[in-house]
Image (tube, rainbow, N blue to C red; front, side):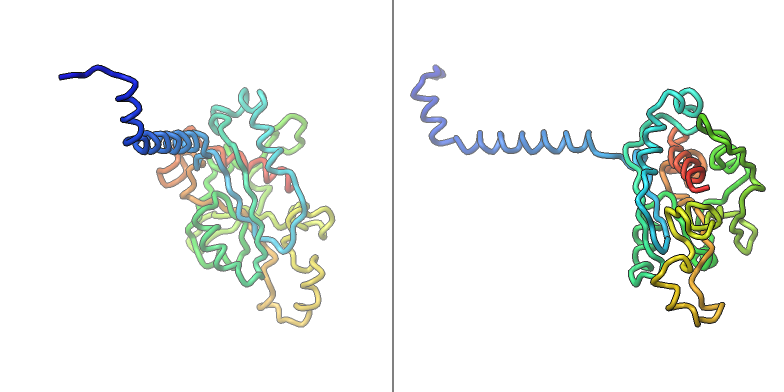
Length: 257
């Protein structure tokens, strides 16, 4: 058999089979791009999503502050063993007006399904007990902001906060609507406005409404037990070394106070 490679044979081969090499080239490029995108994609535990119910919101830099703190040696030296490594790449705040016509849909889809942490009105919480129970361990060791950053003057304990309790006695939410950052001081400097009385467009529309039909003015921060970033406190999907969502709540509470 004549297996000698000649210039004529190469030219003939390319003339009839060139499309095979083009397919191989295209497939190779696609596979390379797919592999790179998967390697560079943000994993679930690298992102903490907040679903914030509020009547108004102002610009803030909570995300940058929390991420910057995690990248410092202070976090690694003092908190890395508790909350895990500095793996957070994104922190997202989705603010939704609870009086918006789309609120129910967004709460069911974005809030319950894709969010790690939620801020919800009292009326919403009264209809469910599906959020993470806030045990003494979880509050004392992870969530309450006690001198967690240099320069902090906070020395919080469990009794310093108000909570939402279900009918069965489950402590499920930390009340944040009394904080300055949510309008608890009358609206001055509020980042997330949780009192409709401080929002001009709602003052007149609800001035003659009976007390039992008024919108929520009590709001609580709760944690989705399905989050993959709450360490051993979730439903088994979160690894012990990934409790970064709890750190984000800790920082968020301090910023709001």
